Image (cartoon, rainbow, N blue to C red; front, side):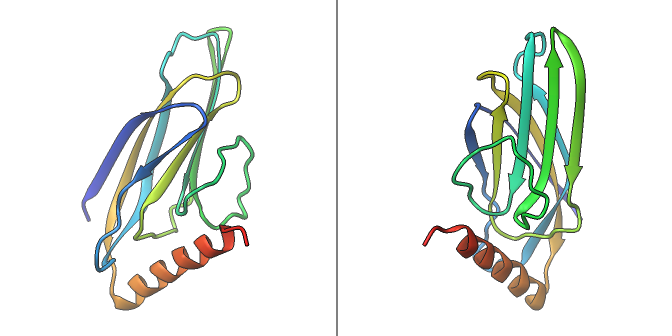
Length: 147
């Protein structure tokens, strides 16, 4: 299946929306690649945390919770005293979605922006898969909505 790619510069403490929804929901997606790099690669200290969710988030945070079924992937990169300290990328590639996704970013050591690059594999969904993916998104949104 074809690959769709998205890229952007996301400010600290913000969320980007990747518009994927369609009228019939027959096209699904899976994340196949997630990469990040600081806006200023020679900055002294950065700690970027970029997360991809299947539902809108009310806050951006550096905390990780892999039991959150709406979390699709995460990328973390650190730089200390102009030395690249490391990068970790985890993608939950068994998760198929057919609605918009949401990318959050926090610089844990300041207020720098971060570049992201995302590749999604398109997957044709049959009626049952379409229904399951849509209902899962609706259920997850309802779970996160304060009562």
